[in-house]
Amino acid sequence: MLSLFASLSTEASWPILALLGLISIFASYVIFSPRQNLSPHSPKQISDQYPIFGALRYFSARWDFYQDAIAESKTGNFSFYLGKYGVIGFSGRQARKEFFESKVLSLHEGTSLSPQVPNPPQTIQGGKPVQETSAFADYFNRRINRMLSRENFGKCVPAMIRDTQTRLLEFGNSGMTDPFDSIHSLVFQLTVRNVGCNDIADDRALLEKTRGIYETMENSYNPSIIVLPWIVKAFTPSFINQSIAGARLYFILKGIVDKRKKTGQRENDTLQYLMDQGDDLGKMIGFIIGALFAGVVNSGINSGWLLCYLVTNPHWMAEVRKEVENAATKYSTDKIASLSDRLANLPVEAWESEFPMLDLCLKETIRVQGQGVFQRRNVSGSDLTIGGEVVPNGAFAVYHVADTHRDETIYKDPEIWDPARYLPDRAEGSNKLDYIGWGIGRHPCPGMRFAKLEMNMIVAFFVATYECTLVDKQGSPIPQPPPLNRNNMVVSKPDTPLYLKYNRRT
Image (cartoon, rainbow, N blue to C red; front, top):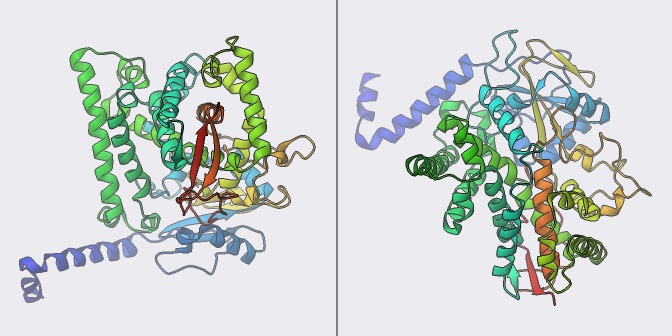
């Protein structure tokens, strides 16, 4: 044995030694960190699983996997493993109600199952409960609630209007643009403006550099690495890329904080508020990074899809444009100013109340485009019953958004973008349990109000300024946005790029 290791100790053999080391670590993980035991009263385990790794199709074809698992189950609920972690999948209205309204299932620990989260799920010690939230999560929630409170919300509206008008001015009188790039960039800027700092929002080069880092962090993960032990996961390319991008973003924000402290410079922004509270540097930067992800990951894509749907639906474009013109007339008496300049006079209350048809269009875009699962974890210290099924202590619970938003008993022709379904004569999804695009129950999206504000603002200014058609890269018209890949794990850009061909309105 010693001679074997001696023969491997040459410089050329170090990669082999490293591989053997990782294999040894993984073997130890399998032997000494066994799978969690599921309860005999948990739903039946699915057949589509592998030893050690579990249900890998959960990562590669999630909605197909979910539908097949429901079909295999007598109750519509099912059990499976992801690595060593036990997971209970739920479906149906009653399970949905209990899942979202549970006071025991932990949102924070549930998200630890996501590959984007750097820290692995906590180890459950027998029957001991785990705190529902971590110290940082509690800090994050307190700060984000402060940022979106009545006294603070809307302070950035003048700057947001200026940012939006400036971006659209740069489009020129005519041209083509990829909304999943240009509008995404604007959403990123508005989000940085509200939950980050003016230093980045006002510097276009720094803004785009920061957005590039953000997109690296967002796109460079491999979801299946959750089945690996943390020490092995740390050596995967996706984890390394995320870590490097996170460090780059950290040092950008740290440089801004250090400059303000050194020069005494002050800004009216979130970063300044955090500094004035005496918050720890690590917490401040963690808050801004977390808030950027929460604010951009869905809104940046949904705003692009919303414009694509509107420009291919003349009726709804006319309805939205009518609202825009009426709002501009109501809040401005200047008959000579452009529609865009008159819109700039709207107060925050108007942005939230004057666009009911646009709100329906956004609601429908979120329903059609919604992907992925809601995740929770039972860390109460004892087994829990949800939807008549036992979720053992330490097990995860998941619910797929499409189980509601693709349900033909709730939504007629669910694959069709049709905002009219929410009008009083149809009232589809009117039950509070039947629309979950913003979350429901105990954990609705805390940033919903801001997300609606920025998307209303972007779309209103865009339709006020331009006439558009949806085209491909060669400029050929496309009658409707393409169908979605329902197995995407999150809201996603189109597989084939889409463009808006625009001309300035006169």
